[in-house]
Length: 382
Image 1 (cartoon, rainbow, N blue to C red):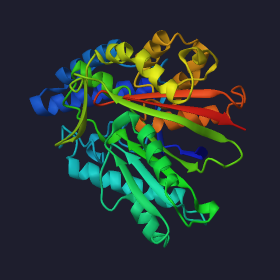
Image 2 (cartoon, rainbow, N blue to C red; image 1 turned 120 degrees about the vertical axis):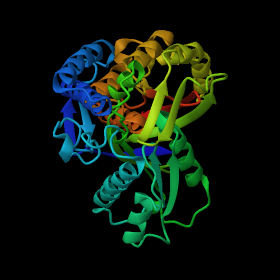
Image 3 (tube, helix red, strand yellow; image 1 turned 120 degrees about the horizontal axis):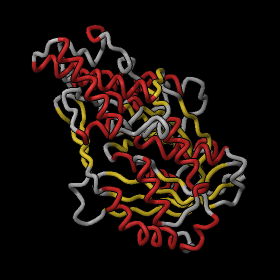
Image 4 (cartoon, rainbow, N blue to C red; image 1 turned 135 degrees about the vertical axis):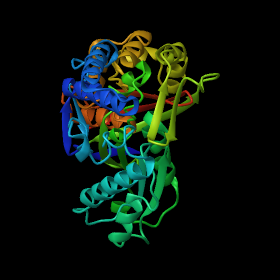
């Protein structure tokens, strides 16, 4: 199949990383002051100390310059006026019900907006997210509102985390392989990612692990189309897909619903565990495309940037030149880690980049809870 028509919608708010890290230190200190009864002097000292720690452990502004945020709260310290992070009265932030309602509101509005100008119904919409759950989903609501219910299926690809773009391609490929009486123009599957990571912060937890997590993630909204293999014109042809769950690695990364949003745990061993399995995984992925590891030398490689160290280790293990992973670094720099929406943003840039010629193979990698390793081999088509 061919991936085409990438459309990214920038979240309504953006915050430079330096200001985001400063705001996090203030939020941690405000939450601690409210739960521990600190006076203003003690609160100020704590904020200054936490800011110094953040400078040492957080992803720095030279790696992530700006993060997009669908939620207006982040960056503002008028705590009483915050919608979710009203820390004067809710030091943890508001509970999961309030965050879920906000997720639903933002996602519903996004689907309505992104499909407002579409005249033809797609054959299917695959909705991908791990940062919220509401039923009916925004995808179902827009199908109902547009009167597409008899023509458009909705499939939910939820709670897989950062690697979910690859299983979404597998779902789309399966859908396109089914017999259908649809007109060619409607033989398309739309894949839509709505990741709202800014909803999932508990300011009372400023452990080093959570400081790292809170310094990485941003919001991402993107959709694109999977079309039948015979489609002509510009796009990314899907040649191979492969997934593996690493043995004895289930405790390395987790993503769970808590009382105050969702929370990630992230072991410092994750880059090493991925690096240890990556070369064998890559060989098996490339073999599915009829390629060998030597073919990596002429490839442009898309790496989901869980963080800068993930890109570094992938490049090191696979012996890649800096230019081969430059787009992955650029997307991390410009957007942050947008969970499952990140890899599609990398694909979109590679498709639009004239320096990447038609015929270039694009091995793509993403990682998430399990530990799950996912890969795809794409080929750029003019």
